[in-house]
Image (cartoon, rainbow, N blue to C red; front, side, top):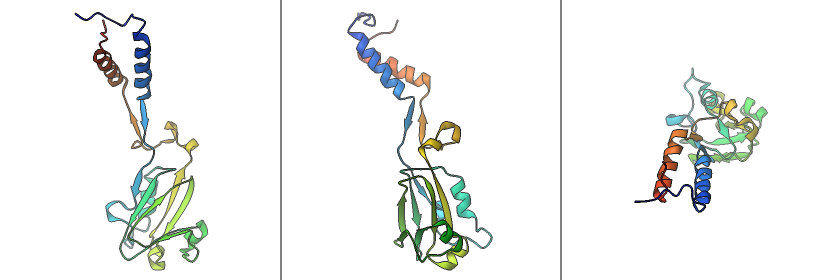
Length: 174
């Protein structure tokens, strides 16, 4: 019959290590996420009465530094431009340009990013989007951060894991 080792001096460091480890599981944060612009429709010219589809899509998401967005399209392009060029659909001075049909853009800092189609008529019909990337200070639980980044672990599951680990190492709770 196994003797309880919880009271032994050897058990204390192991138990403390397990408690610290399990406590760290309370909230696990994923470092980045990739968004697909326009969902299953991709980066396309909006229908005539739906010029706000991309701004509505962007407002439903929370973007963070190190996230990426993917633009899937055919016979088109995507550009990052200044705010004034965005408003005028001016593609003459892009800060970024791609026309490969499957463009991934990585956010390396917070702020507003202005994307437009390089085809003037497409941009004028609403194929453009502003993505606001949150700064780390803005990304707190009270700011409505997205749930797909934070995976909470309940206290009960942490306790069950602790009990399993203790029994695995030969420790028995009374």
